[in-house]
Image 1 (cartoon, one colour):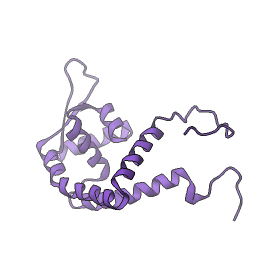
Image 2 (cartoon, rainbow, N blue to C red):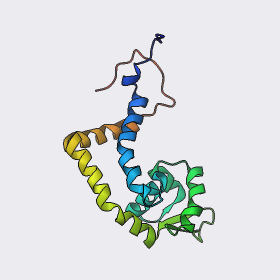
Image 3 (cartoon, rainbow, N blue to C red):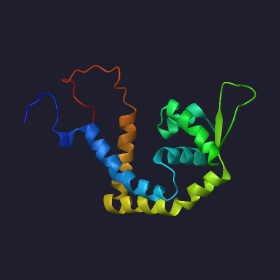
Image 4 (cartoon, rainbow, N blue to C red):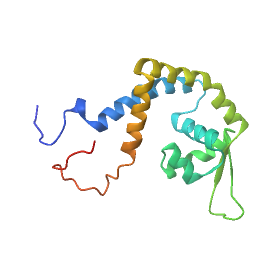
Length: 159
């Protein structure tokens, strides 16, 4: 083993811990979606449109945590599959607005029970209050601006 100063042990590495947690949560969701032929990225797009209504592509990309270029590549196939529709607003021909179709909504609704059961299991095994606290902490973490932040390790973390 090579000691690397400044690194946490892998078991306590935040990026790796977040990836492990993501896989724990996404495994059952991927299993749920396997029967419908919809991948997790398409599912996120459908869920955003189901919850928020018609949206401009950049808004959907931000809400679904997708690169705009990835979403742009997904739109055509999703339109062809009848899951979403797209339109160009006459007042701004540079924009594309997408909306969930009845077929897309039916797909989301078909998985609603199973999705709720997955969340229910997480709440039961992890605890409702702990889950809410985790979601609050993750929202706090998302608000950090670390790209341009100084790397002074002597600063004390805020509590």
